[in-house]
Amino acid sequence: MSFDEQLEYLADLKRRAALGGGQDRIDAQHERGKMTARERIAMLVDPGTFEEIDALAVDWSENESTVERDYGEAVVTGWGRVEGRPVYVYAQDFTLFGGSVSKVVGEKIAKTMDLAVKTGAPVVGLNDSGGARIQEGVDALAGYGEIFIRNVRASGVIPQISVIMGPCAGGAVYSPAITDFIFMVEGTSQMYITGPEVIASVTGERTTFEELGGAKSHSAKSGVAHFSAADEQECIDQVKRLLSFIPSNNMDDAPYIDTGDDPNRSLDDILSIVPAEETLPYDVRDVIERLVDNGDFIEVHESFAQNIVCALGRIDGHSVGVVANQPMYLGGVLDIDSSRKAARFVRFCDSFNIPVVTLVDVPGYLPGVAQEYGGIITHGAKLLYAYAEATVPKITVITRKGFGGAYDAMGSKHLGADVNYAWPGAAIAVMGGDQAVNIIGRREIQAAEDQAARRTELVQDYKRRYEHPYIAAAKGYIDDVIDPRQTRSKIAHALEMLRSKAETLPAKKHGNIPL
Ligand code: HXC
Image (tube, rainbow, N blue to C red; front, side, top):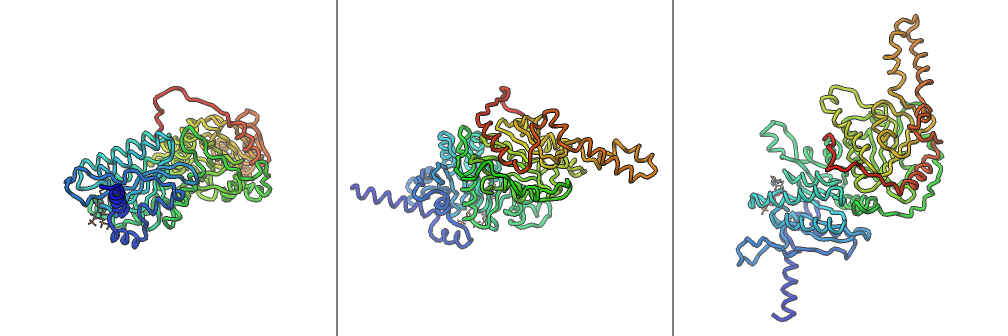
């Protein structure tokens, strides 16, 4: 073959690889409102930066004389840059065998992940697959197993992001579940262990793919998905935005951005946002918006367990994770879902050197039989565990109230927070006065002639004696009582001081978080 012929032959192979399952299937993919694997990668990475690997990988166990091989198999893999930073990508190609995972597909994804770990860069997996390649049997299952073990070993080393852009069924859901964040697209992506037909035959329940495993269900009900987008473009934009807040690996810091926002900026209208009366609701996102640089933050699990807000933003140009009770939902109480949500977020931040800023306004843990039977003890403990285990800088501000075990759990000094502040109106106690007098004042109220009046007196006395921040300040449990308008500057100064923080936990194989 002449050199020109060699190049023509190579170009032909690449053309065939690029066509995946062929033009008809590409058209069918578009008709369903879905992009192809390569189009998705092009949306994600900076133009001209994608370096594909294994485009010529084939299942060599096929008859060697077969000319019409499926070059590249059902996944496109490689690396590129997102806003200048290296990122590894794999995108399942639904046009070939429904994007199903074969031995070759598993090997391609595993190779990509290995490179990502070796070089310390995030992996973004674009999932659109019918699951294990049925015809390949155990080889396909082996392919998945190779991905799972890498997901686990890479956890806490490089950020792993799963984007679901089509079906993700059966055991296939477990790779995304191990990764740090799951993104879903409304209307076109579904995750489920067993589909509606199997469910109908086993339990008799009637449901649809979308109702069962769609983006809305998983982002609001199960909490499996962290982000949900209206379409693929919005989804990829969300991925890029998330990446901008997080480091490339666990040895790195998140990118510093010169935001131009004065760290000493006074939060002038904060007192008109947070009502002094501790039971009145407000949207804590309004506080976060004022706290972070230019009001710019991204909320994780926006629609799930809305009684707690977890967000990534920047203060003085450096990324922070913000955990805040949300008085607008369930009074900001801690329950099973909010504990799970915040615990996982704190652990993500801790894994990737992102300081945690906690805004506390919590009435306690949610009472109830359903909560107890659902395991609030175990799930609530996750939050305590996550805070206590985290060695990143931890700064906590009690804005209105911190009651009971929830006071301890929400980044208290006792769980190792570095700097703890309270606003002057903050109530820090075992419980609120209304509940407390029912216990410690019961006999006195019963003995009184005017029981209602005595009760009111006792509540007022309790509030005067206990519901303020000065006992905690006297004991050093909080480091200062601050003017709420100075909250941003106080946090910014603490973060600056803590930038050189180095804390190590006792040597061990790993802890045993109450899962
Ligand atoms: C091989 C598959 C496949 C699979 C789909 N295809 N899934 N080929 N193995 N797992 C093929 C189809 O045969 C079809 O090929 C093409 O992909 C497109 O599929 P359609 O069914 O036409 O598409 P659609 O109607 O959109 O339905 C998509 C789907 C459905 C919902 C994903 O294909 C489906 O239910 N697939 C099986 C899902 C499943 O049960 N997978 C196993 C899960 S268990 P042709 O050539 O006819 O167009 C699992 C275990 C993992 O994955 C374990 C890890 C531990």
